[in-house]
Image (cartoon, rainbow over all chains, first blue to last red; front, side, top):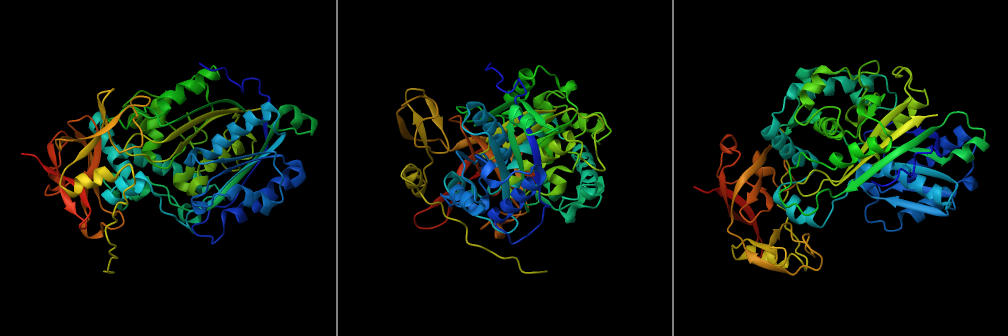
Length: 393
Length: 138
């Protein structure tokens, strides 16, 4: 196994920012980026000339724009010496933090701004390639249908208790009630009956199994711990382990879709940090679908394969519970700002570790596991899986 | 009830790599890429073999037969499938060892069972394009 390049706690997140998620803003990803940048400068006292590294996600709204990052930094008045565009779908925000950490360690840059924005509620583009030929044209279009078949595969293998997913949906809504950045539509409680009665999209995937496509974004400033200390920063959060995989099990033409990249990166990120699931104070998993959370619980090792439903039915996942999960409601309840969605889970983890999670603070939270999921491939688990452990200083 | 919008069913746009697949489909034949050296098939058609480095890929006719691995009944349709809703999509394990996702034809949703035998059939979308689907293989 590779060394853990983050083990010395020499990389530090010193600030984060987030926009209120909206259903349809009419804004562009660049306009949101400007707002986030202004928030970060206000928090840190930094100026554009201090930023020499920039990492951004690739918004769906910018699909086809081959010069997106150049245009963006020009719009923002930045001159990066390291510039990163990451297109691993929902994995991009977490992936960018890891890539920034690597760049900082090489000395390519000293202070990095990571920005993730998208306006999927306002603008949506169609994709080509095998997606168009063998998915859209087959009636196999979109994540809900893909997850419908995946859920059936899980049900066939282990049995799927929908009331467990319903319980997760209800619990996650509680997070949105106290999260002012959550999309207003979801800031009301639901019951398991509401979940079961919600509109069927692709059996068994219902409307309340899925995220809602919205507009929004988040950002952070990351630097070396040395630089942060010299700046006089008192509160910082260190990434302490990271693991990533794309196109898990590439040669398998009949893969078990319930076995995902998390079967690799989950145990690996814990091993890199010399931790077990019991050592984690919080879990902030990428949650485009309720069942995705359950699969991650199994494959990271919180419970065994096929035990996810029982685990959800018997575990208190509220901020004061056994394992707090997505305390701000996750993307399921706060909304999914397109391909910036991974920033919802990441930002909530940072907010908790900075001790700023008003109304839902996990007492004594010192660490968190955050994950990312990106890209729906041709019926094989999912494209990219990422996992990072963060620790408050 | 509001009238639901119907879109034309999308046509695949063949690439250099996939043109042979659609040529076969036009003639009612299911063709799959086969890596001779590795002795394995692959689907979806790719520009290279996923089984070996520099593997020689050739197109071979498939039997068209397989079994149902997993399914979903789609109620909110893909674009162009509005007048087919609800339709059942199945992930089908072909005899050649690859999995293909296609619509089930002539099988009621409640009759789509895991492991049932299926065979390929074709939806004629245009003079040039037949699209694969699956029916019961009794």
